[in-house]
Length: 109
Image 1 (cartoon, helix red, strand yellow):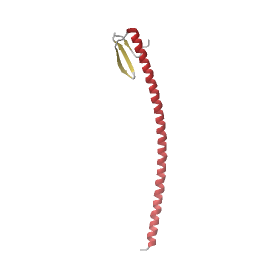
Image 2 (image 1 turned 90 degrees about the horizontal axis):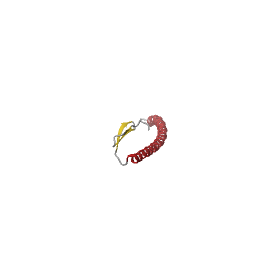
Image 3 (image 1 turned 135 degrees about the vertical axis):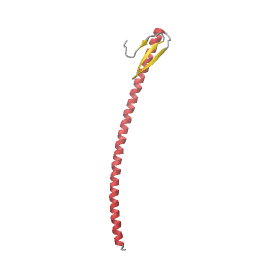
Image 4 (image 1 turned 60 degrees about the vertical axis):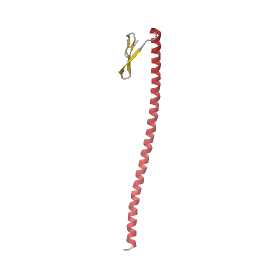
């Protein structure tokens, strides 16, 4: 067996290997690009979620202020009586006072 035959076979295999390396590098670069895009989208999503959490917290604060006003009004009119809350779904509640009065979520004063 001549060494030149083996040498040429080696060169062919290495050339084929080089092609596969190049294709692999191309796929790596594409993967890195997609990861960078994903990271960018994830960061944007986190930013939006933080803003949503902030707005929810502000909404909860307003709910608490409304509940406080309601409790103060009940105390002023009836004194210290019991309240019973009934959840109706979709963030809606009815309030029944110990004296039997019921205040519905959809009734305006």
